[in-house]
Image 1: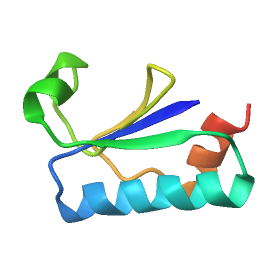
Image 2: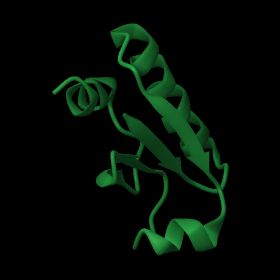
Image 3: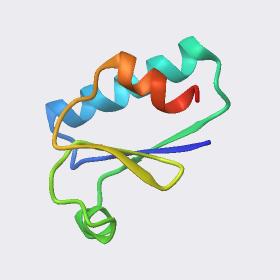
Image 4: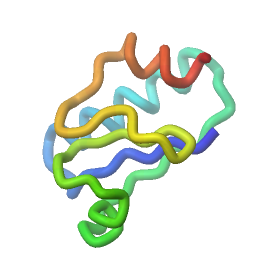
Amino acid sequence: MEIKVLGPGCAKCVKAEKLVKEVVEETGVDASVEKVTDMLQIASYGIFGTPSVIVDGEVKCTGKVPKKADIKAWITK
C-alpha cells in the first residue's frame, strides 16, 4: 500500500503525516508513507487544499487533518 501525505509543511500537514504514521504502525498494515511537499507535484494531483491524504492513488481527504478512525478505515479495508 502506498500512502502520500501532501502539504508544504504547515502544522496541520505535519499533524496529518504523524497521524497516518501512527495508524499504520498501530494496525501493522504493510504501507509506505511518503510526504510530498513540492507544490507543483501536489497540484499535479488536482489538489489545492492541504493537508491531503492519498491512499493507493485515491484522494481520501483534502484540506483538513483526518481523524484516526478515518485513516484506519481507509487502510484496513
